[in-house]
Length: 161
Image (cartoon, rainbow, N blue to C red):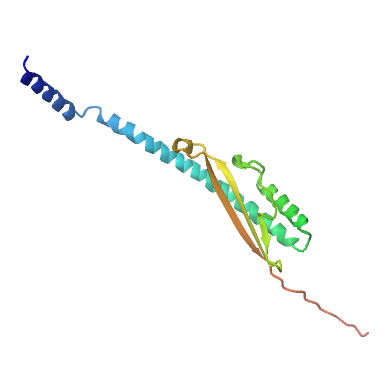
């Protein structure tokens, strides 16, 4: 066999290989499976993060209302009340989070104690995003309680009989 015959045979084989499209869909599906699973995992984990944020917001609103109710009590009592209401609405370890403590880093108020601000953050372990090298998501929630100081209405009735 001479060189031209081998080269021509190689060209025909290469042309047949490139022109053959049987089984091409399997290769395309194999390449698209990786990002497809990534997006499915992303949607599941972000859905879980949304549920966590909703639960955090609900618990934080309850804690803020409890803190606002007793705002003129000693600070330790305010934190304890807020913690009690927060824990009742956000169970310890919910969705794999670390327990959250209500203290001066999560609750603050202005000097006249009219505005109360609460902010918390929770880290949630991911289930599917490990594939994309994301092992946890940080979810935060905050709320602000504005106290309405209406004063006191007093009615005095005098009876001269």
